[in-house]
Length: 215
Ligand SMILES: Nc1ncnc2c1ncn2[C@@H]1O[C@H](COP(=O)(O)OP(=O)(O)OP(=O)(O)O)[C@@H](O)[C@H]1O
View 1 (cartoon, helix red, strand yellow):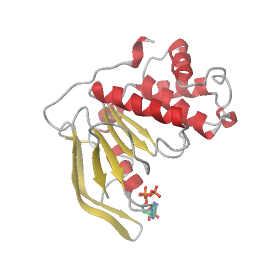
View 2: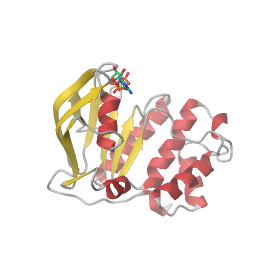
View 3: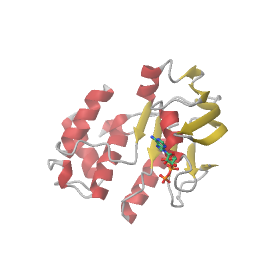
View 4: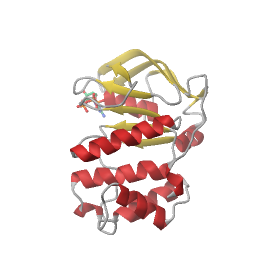
């Protein structure tokens, strides 16, 4: 599969910048004065207790929600003003599996390729699914897959999507030990190609030079 390795632009400036974010959910202020700079090739691990606001932060950084105040910039431009361009740079995987249950694993990859506007041949999609242990499961409806197998479909999406910035909410949940190592390696390879990752996880991760943001 030729399309699995992409090299993204480097930059001496941070590509993603959050400045003085304030996040309110319901009646509660979850955090304020939160600033973050993410450079090409960096991985950030957002940590904190249940309910502290990790998912809320990832939703802000993905442009799915707006902060009470503060700005989020990609390459110096507001992610809300440049929403379409930002979406092309971004892969957001929420902690609920973002898969259509009635479609097969292969159909899900095809569907997302259509939404993302990328060319993905069936051959490349099948190779990506098999790379993550889904040989023989490509044509099963997703509702027939186990929780870990669904996560593996999402790992196949990560390699077929070619987005520079991965924002991943609890990506290691439900993965067995082998798949945890595979996902860590996938992230390391992505970083080597100037990719960027912001993730939440309640477990310690074996990713060198990872930066930590404690909420
Ligand atoms: N739509 C909403 N309306 C009101 N409050 C909300 C809403 N969504 C989330 N919250 C609250 O915001 C807080 C932060 O939620 P969030 O999901 O960001 O936490 P988290 O740090 O990701 O937690 P966990 O580790 O359990 O996944 C929680 O107290 C939650 O109840």
